[in-house]
Length: 546
Image (cartoon, rainbow, N blue to C red; front, side, top):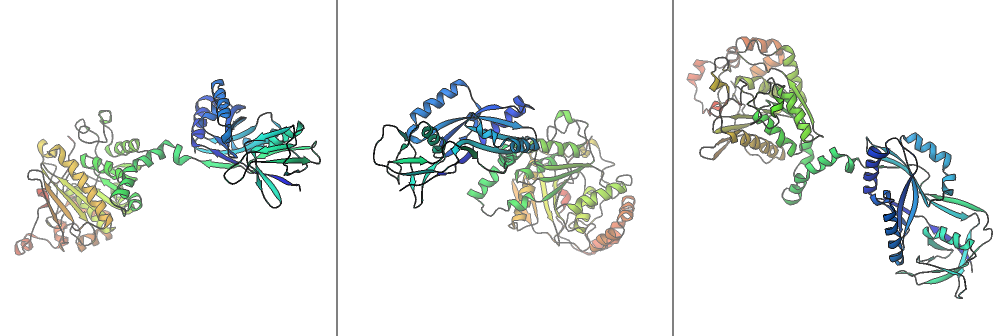
């Protein structure tokens, strides 16, 4: 009894190496040339495979394919020869397909591959056709035990179903070609579930033919930006260490939470530069620098975002640019502005105040490493006002201090509520530069970032870290808010909130008003006992340009 002979649709597999090779050819060799190119493919188990070797159509490769075909024929592997066209716009691709989708199937080639390559987005739109000729009338078949003189043998297996026989697509054109030569008997090989067998094929109207083979009637798009974009590849590799940490040591590391943090670095010197490098190593990608200085000749040897060619450039902007050369996916910005300070009446404009306030308002965490005690006053006060995290970093010759300032714990001025004033104008050259052992700033930067990561993780149990290189000892403390603090007391923050610019301008001229406003005075100090852990013993700063 004859049954319908059907053919299972083929599957197309395009290896990423094909797209990367085509990308390079289009960019460097073909450019705007969208003419026909030769292309090769391999068929195995009813699947069509293309990889980077498909674009190598040398005679040497053709010979290899023929050898492979003969040696591995028993494994149903064969080669196809086709044409490739790479269009410059998607509209060109769609128009060419619509106008020629039927005539292209009559091509002398075995397949047609039409592609639009978006080189900027690493995206590819395509149509693929395995050009197949077939009669309009249906093929019918039945099992036949008799042997005939003209019998064609194929390595494919045939599947018997109640109402039809099923063969892979790869047999469709082969049967048509052999049938046109007068062959009616076909023998098929065995597989794990089907024994070898022979079938007798018939077709009632063989002369009228049709053409088919498009893998899809609509355009297919593959986006390889995640694998081909060198910036994204760099990003993936940059996060490799973090992912290994999750696999091996810390399955609950909040990597996504860290990645989303907006980080503001006030001070782009030795500490600021090192902090930035460590932040991107932890996966943070939104980093803003604030500094008023320019790169000096003494900076590059200690400050790892600058080189000798940067001397004279604005630090904040140069640091941001350097960070993006290290990891292009980082969103880094730099702002050159003077931070207004108590006792410095000519430092800081209303625009500087406005810019600093907006930057603090929009950030999540501030890493503070300014070059003076008074330089920390306004950033801490504004951060307290906007309820932002602060990591305050101070270094000295062989010691360092790192503070976490947030909510009700103590700030930099709580343990020493004396109002900040001008400590810089009368400094000698040895006082203007922070004289410190070279490793102290890097140790401080590393501890500051690791400390904050532990804070985000919720495992930090203290508010500040002191370390002295001379005896290699750490001291970790919990801090408490001081009601008469010259920076974060209720009175100071209320005045800053109500009269921001006017209050800051007054403080620049007369810093002693801070003590009066907070309730602190010499008489009050003499009458109270404080357990003062002097912050200034660690250091008031990084370095000042000379």
